[in-house]
Image 1 (cartoon, one colour):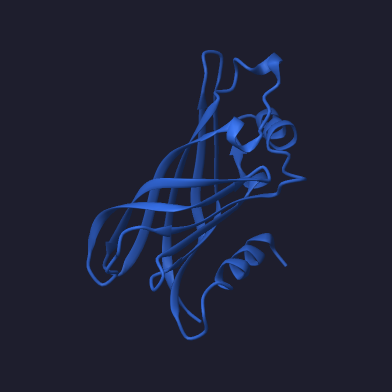
Image 2 (image 1 turned 180 degrees about the horizontal axis):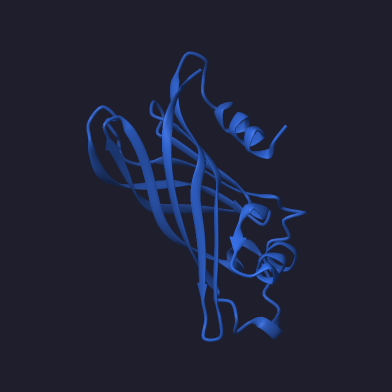
Length: 181
């Protein structure tokens, strides 16, 4: 079974039978590290997410090796030296939107999502800001936040310490479709 399907089935297992919820199979997740010597940019459109409007639960999962970089060597170092994607294949966030959202009304609403972010086998409590947009029944969630390498035990070798920032900027955009269980 494809990794994306496994992720989706795992995420939807939190939804009780008979309840409607929303899924995204192609969330765009990008990362950016700026340093004096080199900027590092990676992107994937393979993020999976589930939104439960009854509980305001919002879960994301992304396969680390799905990130693409401008240079093949960057991807290799990202997967083998830093994120160790063979050992820690996914990053996962499980959280709850703190605001009550009426999904029947169009608009863009600021949100905060509180939950657990697991990267590189280390789970950290996080409160992440974002926007929740409803337009003609379509739901889109977007967020920009920082992830500190040290918070997730991601070691940066001293030799390349000046090439990689201590904090990585993350951007997430997910558009959902309704799924009836």
